[in-house]
Amino acid sequence: MDWFVAPDYWLARLVFQRGLAAVYLVAFAGAALQFRALIGERGMTPVPRYLERVPWRAAPTLFRLHYSDRFFAGCAWAGAALSAALLAGVDRFVPLWATLPLWLAPWALYLSIVNVGQTWYGFGWESLLLETGFLAVFLGNDEVAPPVLVLFLLRWLLFRLEFGAGLIKLRGDACWRKLTCLYFHHETQPMPGPLSWFFHHLPRPLHRVEVAANHVTQLAVPFLLFTPQPVATVAASVMIVTQVWLVLSGNFAWLNWLAIVIAASALDLSPLRSPPALPASPLWYEILVFALTALVAVLSVRPARNLLSRHQSMNRSYDVLHLVNTYGAFGSVGRIRDEIVIEGTADAGPRPDAEWRAYEFHGKPGDPRRLPRQFAPYHLRLDWLMWFAALSPAYARPWFGPLVERLLDNDRDTLRLLRHNPFPDTPPAYVRARVFRYRYTTWRELRETGAWWERTYVREFLPPTRLR
Image (cartoon, rainbow, N blue to C red):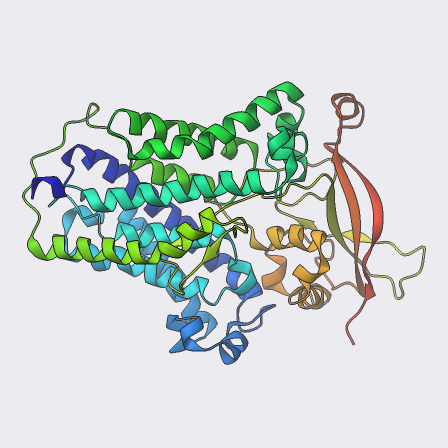
């Protein structure tokens, strides 16, 4: 069937597949390097304890069969190795039928990790990676041209990602409608990047233009994805430029990078390189693609209803396999930035004159003189949860106490998640946590003090605590 395939998207498929493999690689490497302190056997929220209280149907995962830290690490590094092989193009050198399990394996491995990741993996980009990865299973390789239906499903995913984010803003915080949200966003976002301070100090009229352009990109441009070329390519290109702008202005793990990869699948790159002559698709492959399309159509009903609902949800999965999800971000924007600063002391008692030394994190603000670093697409999970904890202690209830216990014990795996341990030789006697209010310094303050942040004490978060 000539209409079944789109040879002009051969290069776009190649870019998409290599980009997706790169995101998979980052995700698996991050899981392997961070899991022991977070969800390992001795972690803050251990996987075995979680599996005891959650039924199989609510969290299907390979770790139902067996769990140990060694097995988890093996799965994560196996996923990283497989992703690296796909990034190198191994799928181009195997038969068409073999590409399906080759792309299905990283999806299944990462699903197993997400479904035991608990609050550490409760981010929208986890579901986005899984939904994208499942569609990639059916894109084929150089033995066939890209299937039109799978390309359409990728555009449907991109549409929901952008349009959902646009709607949640209009329905949420009034500052989006007033075009003023960027007066605050760069300062209060979860994890600022090295350029966020400079973005924050752009002229306010330019901030208003940014918000208006964002509304156009997320609420109008997505509909153009379903129009003929070259309009669809222009629409996808606008989205890519917007995502690059977001990459420069903050650290949102691989959310923006994956959005760029998905948008690349809608680009007509045939003028750059003519597609090779490809044989007709085998019948079994066409049947699988039709089955996938029918499955996604059925599972899309609830996410589509959510888009139309006045009570729209953000970043929600409607099935345990994360096949079709709903997305959205920043329905509300904070006006102030509170940060939890964790400190320890080696003194025998928490006296008023005790010497308290701060633990420093890789990504979240701490030392006011330290310029935030760029970590995305790598995801610093503890740093992100610390931001949520500052918004409300309820976010921290399951894991903050165990975190403090591990700091009091100088736990090696936990300390690896931090940038600086002020007690490298012996553990502290006491640990406390305090909330400070951070704001960006002005240009004059930066020149005079060398500090990027100015902070003031707000309240106690955790009183001085020691191990019993």
